[in-house]
Length: 309
Image (tube, rainbow, N blue to C red; front, side):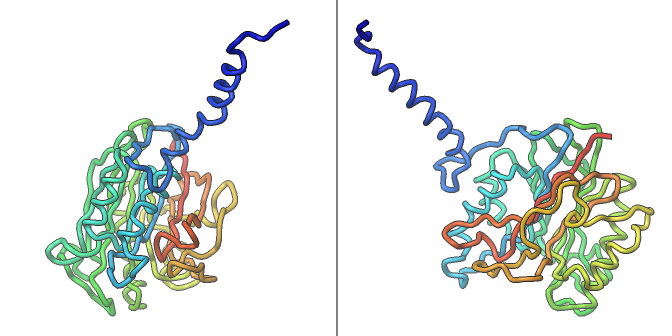
C-alpha cells in the first residue's frame, strides 16, 4: 500500500521534536545564556539547599581570573545547583549586585566590614519565592562586636558575621543562618571568632535550627574548628559538620582551595555546620569549572537539609 504523500515529512518532524525539545530546558542553565533564568520552586517543600561560597573579591590584578571574566559562571553554579540560601564571602557590593542581575528571584542581606559599611561583605542570598527575612544583623568579630570597622586580637582586617532569621514559606519551621569569614593570618583572632559566633548563634537563634557557614581559614583539626564542634553551643545543642554527618556520604574532594587552577590537597577551610535538630541529607564540595578554570579560588560547599518534623 502506498505511503501518504507527506508521511515522511511528518515522521521527520516528530523525530526532530522529540530529540531537540530538551535543549530549551538545558539552555536555561547554560553559563552564558543571553537572559537570566528565574528559578522556579522545584525543590521539595520540606528541604532546603544551602551553599557557602568565597567568590574572591574583584581584583583587577587577577587578570584572566578577575571578576568580569567569571561572574556568569558563579551565578550559573548557584542557579544550576538550586541553592535556596547562599553565604558569600569576600563579596564587594557591586559583585553582589552583578549576581542579583544574573539571579532573578533572589535577594540578600548584609553590610560591608568597614566602618562606613563598604568593603567585603559576608552577605546571605536567598530565594524570595520560598524564604522571607524576619530579622537580620551584622556584627564584627572583635571585642566590640557592635562597633563598625572594629578589629581585635591579631586580626589583619576587620572581620564580620551576618545572620538572618528566615521564615521558610512552605514549611512551618523557621531557621537561623549565620555566615562569616575568619581572619587569614591571626591564629588568636580565628579562635576568638569561633568562640564569638558560637555564642552569638546560641543567643540570637533562640532555639531555632542553626546553620553556621563560611570561610573559616582553618582545617578541621585546628583549634577554631575543634572549639566549634567538640563542645555544645551555649543552648546545649551540638553543631555537626555535614562532611562527616550527611545521610548520603560526602560527594567531591576533601579540599576547598584551588587558587583558580588546581585543587590543593588537605585545604578544606570552607564549611557548613548544622545544629543537631536538622537532618543533613547531602553534602558536597562542588568542582564545576569551565575550560580548566574554576570560577573562584575556593570551591563552593553545598548541603541539603530537611525541615519536616
